[in-house]
Length: 510
Image 1: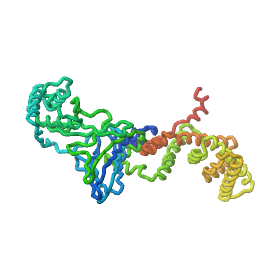
Image 2 (image 1 turned 180 degrees about the horizontal axis):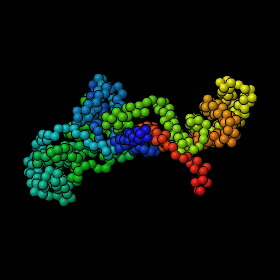
Image 3 (image 1 turned 120 degrees about the vertical axis):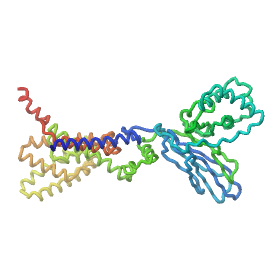
Image 4 (image 1 turned 30 degrees about the vertical axis):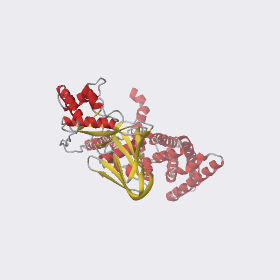
């Protein structure tokens, strides 16, 4: 009955641990590998204008609102002496700088750091009600050409989307008919072209609006927004290439602003100019996922280890590896059959090896144990009581550590200074237990347990110093529930150890 209880408990722990880990990987984007990097685009908008003499200035700049396909890693405003407010009406998001009195040329900056994330879907921003369509007000000549073109397009389309595609195909055709040629006149820039398409669609009672997109390309220093087209299909706004009629945006484009309002206005300023700079860099995917969790409104990251101060995080990066070492000892002792002095001594020695490095740590460990044993045998000759003897061994260990550090420093071996990282009490207890095993079980058994402890400490160091395991346990501490479940299952193991199978190999053959 108890065995079934342990199995059910272990199954529950494994299920909870793996479920939390799966959620963090699939929904939050936390990486399973510490070397995973994410490309982060830094976009800087530089706003420059000349303020009128001793006048109040108010600058309004539309900024991205939950850009589809991207995670906002960070966002900064450089405003100097200006007051800054941001507004979000559910459709548009804007920043407003204001100052009571200013002179001369002024420069303001807005920076946003974006990481590509295709899993982020567009959020509903408006009621599903078709917007009001304003008559375009074409001159008579253009009005006639627009009607003629609409009639031709209507005959070769079946619905709103096919109508838009056919219209744009005719407007952008290399060989144009007289109506298209007339409608192309007076177009001086891409923004005028999008407005002309919007007016033509209004003639056919199809709602549309201008969308401004930014091309994410590394090295852009004097870039500008690209006018794009959005068409309301009766349910939602769909971005459309104003030149080809294909839905969506080009690769590496981020939607900056939608609507007929200008992206930038400056009351009290003239010669307004805005330039966009784009740079690309790599960043730890864990930090990107942390920002993504906040953007999603998830509270998991708020109560994770990442919410702790950095100094405390560094402590837990070490402490969380102790259960890995403990599980390793369970396997080595209960399944393989290695004999060691105690359970936690090899783990603590392995933690010390993280700072001393493995080779130097093993040399210093053997040196201290050897010298400590010699002195411990002398203390046995004095017939001391248990507590005074342990206290004497502890004092001697500290003296030996100090002497080792001084002599190694004088000889130029600075690694010897790291001997102070060894846990003193554990070293004293190891010397005491090894000497007792020497007296009771013989030198051979004492050396076997001593080298077994050293071997387990070395293996524990290799596991606990693994960068991959450290990342996995720190980012997904719920995996310790899986380690706990495996430990509970091994706690019910009563089979033969591997060393026992080797010991009785002759009987097994018979």
